[in-house]
Length: 237
Image 1 (tube, helix red, strand yellow):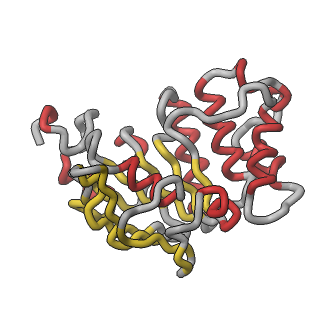
Image 2 (cartoon, rainbow, N blue to C red):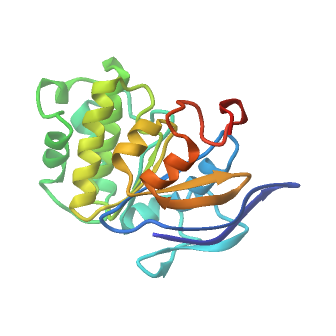
């Protein structure tokens, strides 16, 4: 998935100002930066829920800038949400089945594989989503995305609401997906997750990508041991 010269403005406010980004197969890319940097706007442009005023988004060389989100899902772009977006009245397995039905290929085994991969193939599979804790629901949402057999997986703060053990388990799953050839983009505030998972980090500020490079190099330059947002003036940067 490629973004080229993306620009988004709201009245006089420029949310994205000529952003270029490559999300490569078999790699985990991360986007970090302070609130208001443009991370969410970029994410929505890539997912198809927002159309840029300029620039383009390409999937496998195809221009999908004007292709809406549901059609990008059929082409192999799956996403999760910063605010949990599951169907509360459906069971875990039914939520995951929705993802399989909206995906790019018809694969009868996709639901069971996704449930197994995320540790949801036990009794929890039959429980309604409304009764489940946040950590489990994050896994349900990811399993639903994976059931569609995506080529590109866009993750909007996937560690939000997870404890340390759950974050570690999430990182193992995402690393395995990348190693299997999936292209992953993670927009995340949890720099520990980014440090242990991402191959490349892009730092955003004021609607632009201001720094990109290997994870260890970029986070070291940012002084990433501080748990607050990179480039946050309160963190002394």
